[in-house]
Length: 128
Image (cartoon, rainbow, N blue to C red; front, side, top):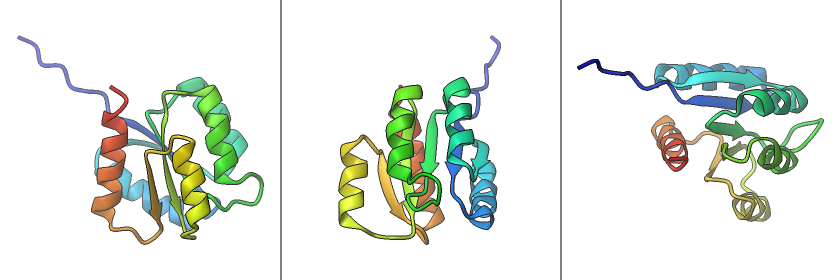
């Protein structure tokens, strides 16, 4: 019997802070995810339209388009992609809006790596 290995889960990360993206990429790479990072929301949405990642980790506060707008557009172009919000500001209204729009999780930057990875795993598993 031939064993088939599962394809790694594709995770797209969007944040305007390139150093934060670099550390996030390292964490997700080390956990076995197939990671693409973006600082530009438009490029992120274009790639998501073509490749439909399983999970997207999105920052809220960005100069060109905020994360809630990205989340809304992502639901249109890749409805099966699960969204995790990872932001620096703990705003209850933003949390409520993100979760009401279908976010799988809402984390504040500085979250423990294990907690973030667990949230991504739950989001990826919920697609099945």
